[in-house]
Amino acid sequence: MLKMAAVVLVFAPAAPILYFIGGTSLLLSAAVQKFMLIKVYARPSALDDDLAKRSRVFLQALLFLHVTMAPIFYAERNHAVERAKAYAACSQRASGEERGLIDGLFGGGAADCEAAAAAAEAMGLLVEHAYSVLEVRAVAGPPPPPGAPRGYRGSGARLLKLRNPWGRLEWRGDWSDDSPLWTAELRAQLGFPEAGRRLPAGPKGGGDGDDGVFWMAWDDFRDYFTAVDVCRVRPEWAEVRSAVSIGGALAGAMGGGSGPHQSLRGFALEVLETTEAELSLLQPSGRGGGSGRSDAGLLSTDLLLLLVSRPGGSEGPTLGGGGLRLVESSEREIREEVSCEALLSPGHYLALPLSLRPAHSDLGWPRTVLRVGSAKPLLCEEVAVAPSELAAAVGEYARRGSRHRAFDGMDLFSLQDGCGWLLFAENRCAALRFTLSLDLGESFNLLASRSSLLTTDSLPPKSAMLVQVLSMAGQAACMMRSRFQFSQAPALFHSAGAHSPELAAPIHEPWPLEGDSRAGGRGTGAGGG
Image 1 (cartoon, helix red, strand yellow):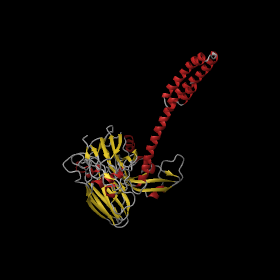
Image 2 (spheres, rainbow, N blue to C red):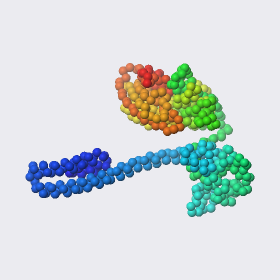
Image 3 (spheres, rainbow, N blue to C red):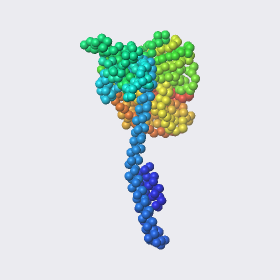
Image 4 (tube, rainbow, N blue to C red):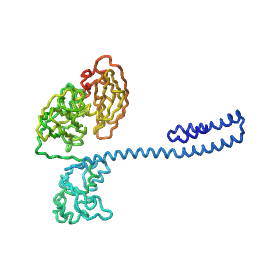
């Protein structure tokens, strides 16, 4: 009994309930010694009392030590977990900044949190404002003295030359116009005259004294700017632009008189010889029209651009919807433009410009423009898109997320992108039906593509479907919390799946895997709600 109490108390920090077990064992040991050893076996009372006393003193001291150290143990463990989470978040942000900033020409916006905004304004920068980067220079200079300012690297400095498009209001920190860090040699090297030799600013700024052009250190640039856009100028490339409708994927899901597949459009591309290609999807800017408002009084929406190969020319794994294969995609984001690029071999491709976010009002989705640029000419034509093609392409995009294995051959995928979450299910079994019930009712600040956060779907054998798309309802924080139940049963008939609520949007159409024809078409609704 005493040994059991000692073992339990040693491992008690792993589970607090063990303290109760250890203390109970300690008390029971006294009763066992008194009544079992002394009464039954007639052992000397003094010997057992002395041994029991020393054992109990030792275990009481051990119990006191563990009770004292346990709070420290749990506090340190929780602190380590929080540190790991913070480190992962910071690493992800830093890696994103590195990927975005190391490029040729830049434009960016200042940090949007209140503290960073106040700090930026105090240093002469405008919040939520675009600046042009005119030059990026690594200049030679004297060895840095002790306590050298930011921007020095070894025997020189890494500097950026920026311009405020207003033509006034400049950076006031290190390497600004009147900064003491400037030497005559550096000014001559960069062609940057002294402040006293430039023309004075006018009553509203401007002039050479305050012309909106300034230099700043690379490290300060990374601290005060959070977004970067790159503009590639390729005058020798072929280019085509076309107005597009992006709401077809969810048409019919929000009600209305139009049929669900009426506005489902894409662009067929025929590549005659191997070429580089870049595709961009643009919507009107929200600047100048109020908070987040864009053209014609519409709010900006999410943008997603998918590029898939059609049958006849692709290698690699195929998916349903007529054998489409996802070649490349943009990130799904609520911003003015998304893009993707790829090296295309000769063959047939399909570009799908999409919005997976429910419309804000009866006005529908904002006007958008698709731009296709290529190093060599290609053919581009607007075409109708079958629901199975659309569902298969978006399903393959969602399939890039994390996998949750329900049963052998039955999986649920969850992808978090720049605008929310996509949930995708597939049933690769040949003779079993896959049923999943999904409860997202505790999610916060998210819009559901199926107009309900409670869904139940039954997938026939060899089929897949996009179960749900959750999109941010606004710029505030959002959270997804899900509960799901899975079941499987023999598929006795080759019938279509059952779905609740009914599948009103073509993006949720089930489609056959690997050419199986049994899962085509929409399933029969199984009730509202």
